[in-house]
Image (tube, rainbow, N blue to C red):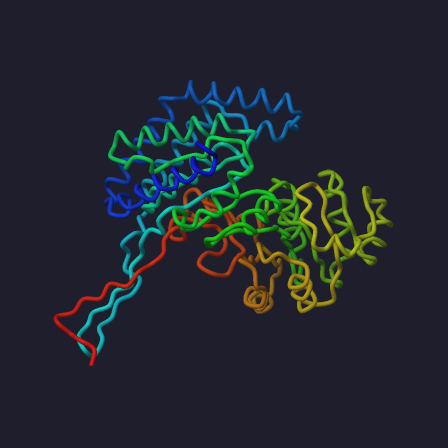
Length: 423
């Protein structure tokens, strides 16, 4: 069987599973999720053995220590995955929720209700726990899922997917509700993206090249974000201590993620005082700064290193590292214009003590998540109270921001009459 035929077979199986999942009660879905959690724990030894093969391969191919740490499973990480499943089981099921309903003058009653999307394809380059996170959110919302993880974690992903399906099946989960593409062949991505007969939606999670490949070939809707060029703007009426805590957290807490700050904007009135306060802290955290002319001059007098003059390309760069761009602006309007020109519409924050200024920023900035006096690092399904997340979207249609259960549903209209005909 060719790779294309194999993937199409997986698609046919997923479509059949999706029909059964769509009518599964909340109680049965929750029972299946709890069975999946138990199966992960029961199969810990199998998961750890598979993961050891992936880690050995990653070390052999020279992956950096941070990447290997993200790849590595442990008893605790497996237990955390299981706990995450149990948390999702405890969340409200959006399927069947009545969004709105009304009665027409002719007596026909119309209801708009949430329903599963059908079959969802998840293509990701990330930690093995994403296999579990993606699968359980799809199952909770009555969707069959086809997973295609990164090549570096193939053995771990296969073991996790098999454990989830086995645990769920023992508790009534339809066969083939959770399937994983068992190959490192990159052509699998193209075949999945072109399989619109069986896949209703694709969510890519990974680097720009992966997302570009999916978007180029996809014949079905794709929910994505290309970049996370996130900003913190420190207003002229900001509490500078608060602003510094927020900026350092947004940049340093996990610099390699999409909701980390990449550019810091400072109002001219407070720039000098802020930088005097911030320079030692930035230096302690080993942040390299690409500064505009004004901030470069001020940091130079403070002997800040490493420091270089910002280039035009820096303003739209997602560093994913302890590097940030720094710019001084004259007004709130200039800050908003900067975000519009260079930002990725992902996560942007203002720090200010002026509520009017804050509300203006919140309403004028066209990003998926907009903050007042808080770090951009909160753009996350768990932090929003969604349980696990399927990803973060900077699209404007269907889903935007962290995608939880509700974003994995669509809706349909139910019309109930008593013999009405259209004249």
